[in-house]
Length: 153
Image (cartoon, rainbow, N blue to C red; front, side, top):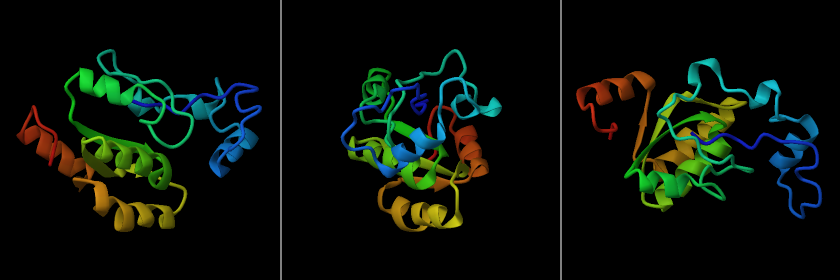
């Protein structure tokens, strides 16, 4: 699990190159520590046995976090990605993961965005170029159930 950075006052002060998304995060306090945007969704609360990485500051769950190291140290070579936002955090993390040699599965109906155009960009244009599998939740659960120690391929 790679959470987005929970912002606190002054986090981005003095930064030279805030992305447009980071500018919106600062203005809207989207992920402000203690706010609704910084809370876990009730259905996705981390369990005791799950790895929680350092928070990412931009779009990639790999860049400037411990995700790559922790996955490799735990002999994990296949990643399954769900979450927000399809054409930024999901797309960037999945691409970076593929570049690092991981098998990448996207769960289409467990990934959200703010518009259908963003979803279309991810699932019709980008993901077919890097994802090894694009499945629905039902397809994934069925595949994992058939192979209890393997990720759907």
